[in-house]
Each structure stands twice: as C-alpha cells, then as structure tokens.
Image: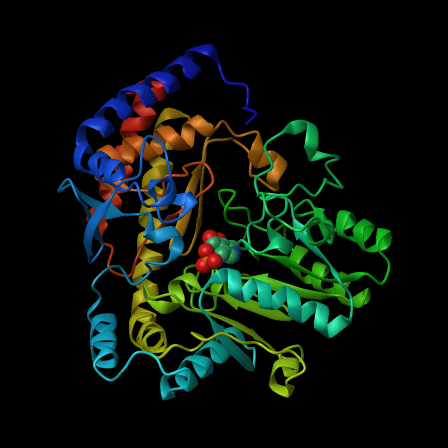
Length: 460
Ligand SMILES: Cc1ncc(COP(=O)(O)O)c(C=O)c1O
C-alpha cells in the first residue's frame, strides 16, 4: 500500500496510536482470542476470509436495536452493519414477527410463496424496473447480471472499474484492490489483475478494467474491443474504496456511450441499495441502468438478493436465460424481505436516517474544522466514511494513495470506545440502522474527536 506523504511526526503518532489501541483491544478481547484459538476446524479461524482482521476477529454474542455485544460482554453501537446488511438494526420487531410466523409454517419448498410477489412489486416500484428474480447473495445477482449482459448482446467481454468489488465470481474478481504498483498499468487503461487464486484466466482476460469517473477511458476500451463488450458493471456510488461519488453527468453519459456501442449497463446496488435511500443510489442520484442488483440490506438480516430490469429480464421471462437456484425466493428470506421493504423501510425511517446522517456529518465536520484537519466526511444516506485526505477521491488510484494506517487507527479507537466499525478501516464505510439514536452518533463523534486530538494535538 503506498501512502500519502505525511509528516514524520504525524506518522510516528499514527504508529503510536495503533500500538496503544492494539494493546487495549487485546486486553478487552480475551474471550474472543480464546474462541479464535478454539476454531481449529474453521479454516483460518473464521467463516469468511474477510472476517479475518487485525489484531484478530471479534466474536459476537448477540445484537439488539442499534447495539452489538461481543463474547467478552462489551457493548457497541453498531456502525459495522454486517458489511452493509443491518439497516434494520437487530431484533427489529417487524423482522422478528415475520420470521417467527414463517418459520412455524415451513421455511423451504423450492416453490414460490405469496411474499415473493409483494417483494418483487415493491422492488419494481423502488427501482422503476418491471421484472425481478431472486438469489441468495450479492455475488449471485452480479453473476446473473454478467451472464444476462452476455446473453442479451451475444458478446463476451465486460468492463468493470479498477477498485470495484462485485462479489467473488471469476468475471468480477479482477482488479478489486490491486496492491503491487508495478502491475497496475497505465492510469487510463489499467491492467486486469486477478484478485484471487483459482480464477479461470480466460474469464479474467474477458474483463476490461477502466478507472472510475473517466468516460474517455470507457470510450477507448470500447474502441479497443469493437463489437466485443457486452456491458459494464459498476456501483452508482462506488463503495469498497471508501465512498466515491460519480462526477456530475457521468452515469447518464456512460449509459448513452455504452448503448451507442450496443453494450449494456448494470448498477450493482448490493451495498448502496436501500441504504443510500428508498431507491438506492439510483434514486438518490436520479440515474438508471439496464439491470440492477440488490442484496445485503434487502433481507433484514437474512440472506437474499435480487436482480431487476426491463427488456434484458425478458430473457429470463422467456426462458432464454435460465436464472436458477434451489434457495431462490426462499420463503423465510422472502418473509423477512417483505417485512423489511414494507414495514421497516418506511418514510419515517428514512427521515430518521437523514436526520442522523446530518448529525454525524456535522459532528465529524466540526471536529475536522476545530483541528483544521485535511480530512473529508463523505456520506450517502445511512452510509458514510471519513476520508483522511484533503481532496475528493475520484478513482481507485486516488484512494490507493491514502495511508491505510488512518483507517486502522480510527477502527481501533472507535472499537475500544464502544462503536463497532467494519474492521477493514480504509476500504469500508459505516452503516447506521433505522434503530440508531443520537446517542449512538454522539458516541461515534466523541471517539473521532479523541482520535483527532491524539493525531493532531488538542486545539483547545
Ligand atoms: C458492491 C458489492 N457487490 C457485490 C457484493 C457481493 O455480495 P455477497 O457478499 O453477498 O456475495 C458485495 C459484498 O460486499 C458488494 O459490496
């Protein structure tokens, strides 16, 4: 990871904050450490490789409302949100009632239940896309999107953004967080770098990488591969690299450009869906695409996903593209999704989130202003992050230059003071839930203020 040049004194303070906070963390997480030691039959001691984090995984016991509780008995305001899922918060009465009711009536038939009609109608209204199908994870929905763009165009290659994450299937596990500078390639035409072992080279080679917010680079990619590009997948607001907003007009011009070349546009709203607003980032920005993928928050904490669209989804309706899966539209997940979309994500809930977004943004900004810190607060509905840089990040190369120690120090400081951020500090964003309160936000701001004092000195 390359770092922005920071003054030696600040660099030393960052290292010492991380060292001190790590000591505190280890002291507070004794039972978690024991659990990690016990988990010998879990490969790597975790249930997903991205749950492995420094200093070690935090094992949780339960959640309630806006709070999480770890196995050591510590309470946290949940700003992790299970990597973008927990928009309902925990133990939400509407989700509990829906799941309890469904579980007693049978949880799986591999036949549709009425809830799936309600969920599909709700998604159609939110996203202005008439046809929907379900899956079980974000990965499945973006995989279907890639297949569908190929099926609709008869072409094989896709375009994705450098630094964009869309799940772990071969076509999109390319240039997600490429590390080695030597491999990155030119800024305007980055190399496609496999993000994992075990990927099929031919599939990886079929993914063309472009920088975010750069239309000429997309145009050049389309010109380099005439008649070969099926479409492009991107998040309308790019997450997984902090938060990167699109330039004004970028998304609509991108759609026009792709269409002019006979290619399609997919919005991956797995993370931004519902969290950025009732109609996700598409609704927030007034943007539209040929296909939309949603997952994460949709299920109120149960695993489900969906893909929606218009003309392209007719390939599913006609059977020309077989969108399949044993657990698709699983009754338990559909019951939870129905409650989430119709009872939890109400106008009042979004009004509360907007109030909390303003409160956290203003609180953090006042700390930044007090310290004259060269940092930015970036928010999008219930999601947000602090970008420890003075300038707006427009693409992965900008993001890459951000020193990863800031995010790690922030994570540790928040964690040790009762706010649970996602552990991959630099990359991830916070998520607030509909059950968050002013007190959760104020706790977060106060710990941020402590971090700023430690790094930049107390201005008072
Ligand atoms: C934008 C985006 N797309 C797709 C995925 C994959 O979703 P899942 O982990 O449910 O497969 C993620 C997961 O973090 C994501 O952030």
